[in-house]
Image (tube, helix red, strand yellow):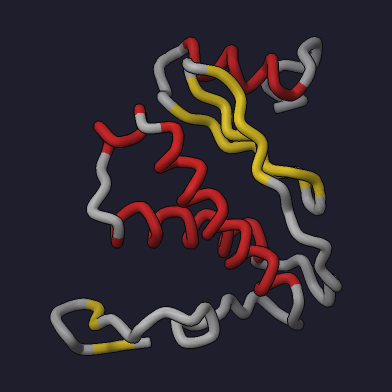
Length: 128
């Protein structure tokens, strides 16, 4: 965001992007809280204190966690207007990102490590 809008504070830069059309902008900041910016305003999702071993892959794991929660919840583009649903998926994404940072390498947690039941992927060819 600093590169896209160097003269704006982070939340203001995210709001300027939302005004261009996206319904949601998620702003991560390492150990800092995640800012969920929508046309309706700003929500803050705290990040738990985490013993970081390796931050490689934590951002990708965060994104994957958000998408997994979103799709598994049966949500699509229209539900992005539901700020509570976005915040809920963001909380899950924070868990996934934090767990990834707690170990070496880009090694995101499995469903079992997150306390979730196994789910078949790609027509039952793989689970985990």
